[in-house]
Image 1 (cartoon, rainbow, N blue to C red):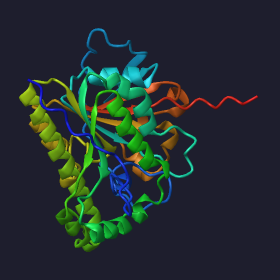
Image 2: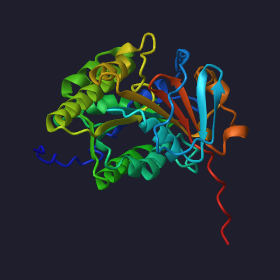
Image 3: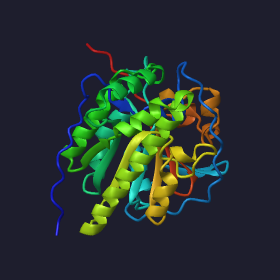
Length: 325
């Protein structure tokens, strides 16, 4: 028996309140490439054991080698690299991105690449896509305005196209038979943020992680009741999807809880556009950073396995635009 068709989710921007692009996860989770509020350094993750062989029928790997303590592989395309990740057969795929910032609009963003290239691959394998846009309940107008004001300093460095591309992501997912949904904080959630004072950033991040986890767990329960083997994908800023919580940020990630909920079938996938990578303290703290040589690897998709069930996929460089006649 199939469960009733889910009510359609309208991914739109509510009047007077800009949809929140993972709120402050953009600055606290993914590395920034312009001046932004300070971001604590990310501790290096534990060394990984060698990756298991790819499942039969998967695209051939261009090359495979050890990158220090990490497994590093190159592929002819990002789609081929994604197939390697999907060979893990995750029940939940937590996707985190380094977001496009102002001044980089000429480079296709992670969201656009995921929408155009990855959604067709996920078609038929995925039941639901949770997008980290926040749509507060009706009746919280005053709190919505206050939270929106607090996030201005964080969202200022972002490309203005980010939010619209998230909306297109949800709309395109539906065309592929994947049900999109967003996060829905209550008035009480917003009140906790506004009353947190200087700790509002932490409360925002905790709220996002909790709402995403609860949404995913609910969808998993529905799939289990229906006997569906489909995957649930959570898409947003890199931080909440961490499979291993960073010290002091345990409440900001849903990875450990979903790993337990799925019996170890949760997979973390961070997506990186190479043009966004900078020589900064935040980027240098990432375990794969010292092993990515853009001059040598920029023409390929590079997949790092930084820990069991934890991957980083660096897209190929964007080909220069052909001159118009």
